[in-house]
Length: 309
Length: 309
Image (tube, rainbow over all chains, first blue to last red):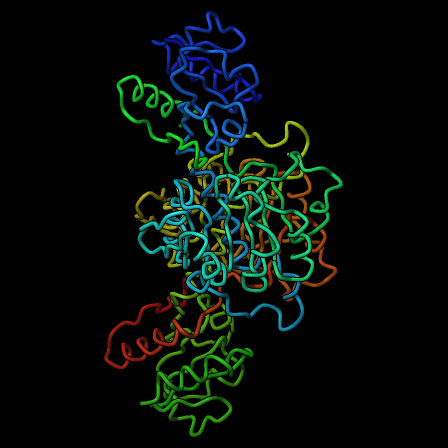
């Protein structure tokens, strides 16, 4: 039994590897490319699966994704449909995502990006809309979506969620499936996309969807760049159907300097920093996943490969 | 016994007067200038006291301020030192203020205004700082300050407050008085000013104070324009001592178009919209104040005129 870590990001060397070495010091922990005998490798930890890794380890028990979204494993056509794949459920990443969502939800709710319009007399003296009068619609009600929902409820917002199956969360109105999408959208002032990327959700943030929201609605995308048809957002912002958007993810990252988003004030972009798996909180989770699998328990985050999450 | 309302803002006619007429329909409610016999007037409700109002009503029981801050009553040198003055404690205003503070605290904590610096490779992939690693320092721990503190604690921030006297609030470190100010400042990453405006607090946000904060600290002022020495903030931003600021109040409002703040990206301004007394929640409070005074009870919000709040 050996665990192979596949480095990919600069923080792997500075953060991940030292913490994993410490946490797994009683186990055989190896860092690619120092694989040793491939037949030893039972766990593969990484941000994605690389060519050459898929079939290289004949005794592999599981792939442990460092990301919450696993499309860079499943999306590979050679990825074995019967593999055990665990997505990351990291409390640190969840906390970061929730913070990001609260930041932009509050900013859009209070219209801080429309302030120049209010600078003419009578200056100020508006009655601000309070949270209970703003409806936040979360698309995707997995672990992160539910955490966002709970915090937004505690801040007084009207919160509703849309997901594959109905969810029962205190104070959150649940919509499920294609048939309830239009009703969900028509009553959403601020839409937050936290969906997994699957063939069904790819491109879901498109012109059709935008025009089912109330005029002037806000969009926040913290999921994946491919959820959004980028040119549709540009048009919807230009004609005022979408009032403002915050995007953390893009089809091409880094966002090219000549991308239309770079010159539209009401499209706020951040460089994929809403949430990233945090080694301090995630390493203990990975330890537990291995322990669970080794003792024959079902680990948290086991992916249904057909559903894609 | 009669209640006189002194209109001042456009929303008085559209919001305040109709709601007050409804709430006080069993009482003698009058709207200036239709005063009737000045000797009838026992309560004066208004945003401030106007010349001619101070001595006009020989049987006045109390001034009821529509604002949380009462410097526009007390600041008038003719305002009687023995008058009963009630400041507004409005749950609606508190909620709005808390929302505003959360919006900018979260935005500054997550450095959303520094994103351009992060656009060079390696793009993104930073480990975001989580709320527990950011210290929010609230100057002013009255009703609004305490409400901000509680919500910020629930969002995971390290929260500390500075006030005249020590406060005992779950999860909030309390500093009091001049002697503890420097320690409070040196451990504050994001400073929020919610102080009442008094001769002691006027100009408190100045160069001296800025340089006692950690380099790059953020400032949020939702109190009064006169708390801030505006030119000191410009210099402190220019040399990086203050990283970013959100200001809702100014020495001159509306903020003049040629004011230096208008051209500094890291000074974010809003037109005095952080919180305003909200008639729907405040009118019942005013009713209760009158009932309390009429039945000989001490009303909430009774101002200590010497202290100024």
